Image (cartoon, rainbow, N blue to C red; front, top):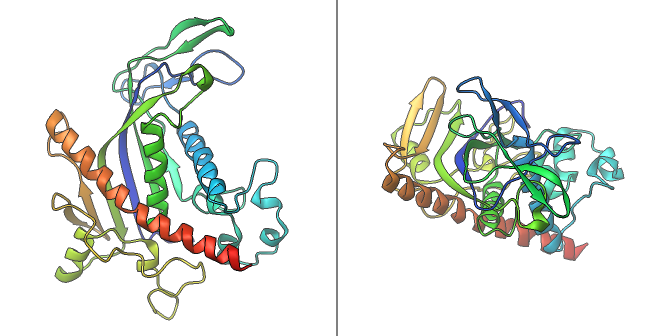
Amino acid sequence: MHRATYNELRLDYAITTVSPLCIQAHDTNRFVTTTHPGSGDLSVYIPGATLKGTLRSAAEHVISSSGLDCCTTDKPCSQREHVKRAATSADLYRALCIACRIFGSSLMRSHLTAIDAFPSQPARAVTVRNSAVEPIEVVEDESFYGMITLRNFERWHVGLLALLLSRINIADVQIGAHRSAGMGCVTIRYTRLTLIYPGFEPGAEPQEAFRTRLHGVGQLFTDPLGRPGTNPYGYIYPDVADMPDLPDAARFERGLGYSAVILAPDDANDPDQADEYHYLIDNVLTQQALAWGNFLHGNQRLRGKR
């Protein structure tokens, strides 16, 4: 399923700390640091694996709370007999639990990737004392900039991601260590949304359809006979909204071997534009929650018939 790319969503974001943030280096009380990509100096950062792990944990809670099957650390999908019997990548994708389909497993690559997030300029952590533990390093009043990507995504992937990010914004989900002490509360602001359709160069009429509607992989996938909507992975088809779900501000671009729809302010330093586009992007993501709800209800009905 990852040999060819049919669509890709790139979500640029800024994470701003609300309460102290503590992401500890392995077996230490020190905040993780690495080389800042802009200056080359040492700086704190939020590892992409930390954000992805937070999102997956929250997704597993949502899926399990909905009454659907979700593997656990003790009993991962890779140890399940029906997964071991999967003969093809399509069989494997259908056999995996919902969380593994989007976040990956030891047997199949993830659809979602989170890139390390850095402050605009190199920053250092400060040491604080906590009566319950030894002195620890935290970061306060700092913003980190990164990107989340979804490759070969279905629209329910986007809807679930929107739900998880909203839970972070209301502090229902926190990041890092010492969350029980109130640490790890952050807000996520969206700065740019890019929808890429590699190898697809539509004409005038399809171009408008792509500029106004987000297309899931099931809408683009074709089998060897060229029949749209038929595929061994069981991708949802049709996977495009009945009504436009992209705002008028979205612009269509065409490059060598790809088409893209971009939603981003002309001046990222203008706070009014930044606020406007954050809400526009948030609205696009939130509208895909309907696709997630439909997918969820469909799986609940299937499970009830077994």
